Image (tube, rainbow, N blue to C red; front, side, top):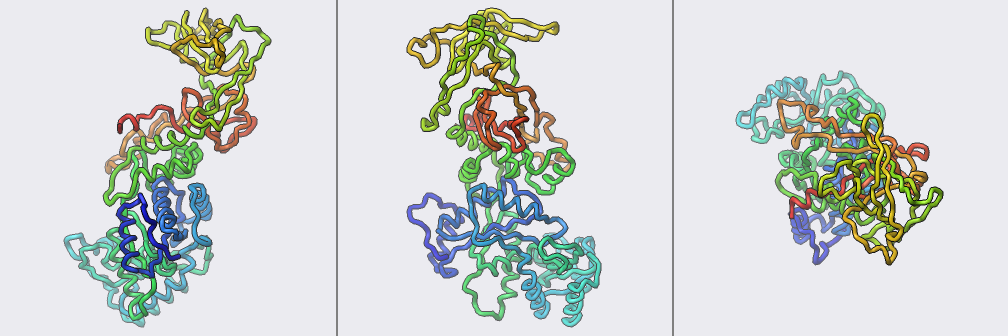
Length: 566
């Protein structure tokens, strides 16, 4: 799809500037085609979300397209489950890829033919060194490596051995195919990198057809070329791989007609969040050891975990935009991500009453059998959301910590002789309370002022405190899960001598049973988001049922990040 850069665009990070320059110079016939190339060996996390927003965002910006390609070159770690989850995550974020999903495995035959071409050119050879021997001979950045004793095999022998590798005549690890480049290169990735290894394991798409699989560095650039990708946007760790990316393309295109499109790799800084680990290996360890309940545990930085916790796609896209695109690595405050979801939910979430640690309050001068329906606004930030009515009765629940037997002077909640307003209802005054044998408050006794009903002209008497509440006879029970950060250390994987699991937060999940919610929440749908008055934003868990309501805390109301960055 051909396109010019839109005029008057506000998005002008360095990647867009490079693309604008390529368009101005007429490269690739002024075509733009990007791609998002995940390996299907785990669930996507918030770092991938930034890359998704960037690659698909570039396509939208230039009225172009973006491919989804699975770089499925390692059957040992890849599963269909991951393929499905990745597609779900991209759709949830609001993006659509061009055509059907693509797979590197679609190109295995072509990649094999190109490997034969490199062997014929004397640019690849079959090696029998073990990984340990290769590492020992690779040298250091300041000292050249040693050449493999198999480096100068004859063309005929290399072709024969590579064919036999494909035929399955050798065991895993017995032989590999290496590119023949330069063992003295200052770039360690150019010191005869591995192109193919033997893996006798069925592939999730090709079955038992192959027992040799190409390495990522060899596969990636050639797949980009096959798909006519114009700009291969990678994270910064691939910057040192770029010479190899270009070297492979140079070899396969040598003696060929100049292609209409040749992909160009551009790197940007990956997303790093404090109090978080992003390594797929470490995230998988958390899952396999049962430290979290799964890839979509709401404490995980995975997109599926954020979704289950109640984060919205709009908030994640807002976060990616605010983080921006940088050339250098940096660490982003997780408070910014929480700020983005809070900002988004503030506009869209209905305000509801929920009491998480209930204590009964009895209004002694309110008729026992009377029920009043109180009108309350659904969201003061959006008048179009309207209002609803909630039942009010003689017995209600309030939060236990909204009452103190001996309150200090500036305690603007409830205590003996103190008055507060019940949200959308009346002003009440505490007259007495009752405790059990252990000294715990079991009941609070109040009177109400019938002239102070919320919304009525005469309800102008002011008190400093306002409490949320739920009618006891109408309340529904729910389980509420309070989530905190999974790690207590800002850099849980930044300490070489300490296992990252040592920094796990033992209080990252607290489960509260017997919470009392207003009756309309009985019909709340899974993943629906609400603001619990005065408590924070909460989401209906995906496993919530009519006979077992489960809510997850998404984020609190307090915005420490915004205050710190004023």
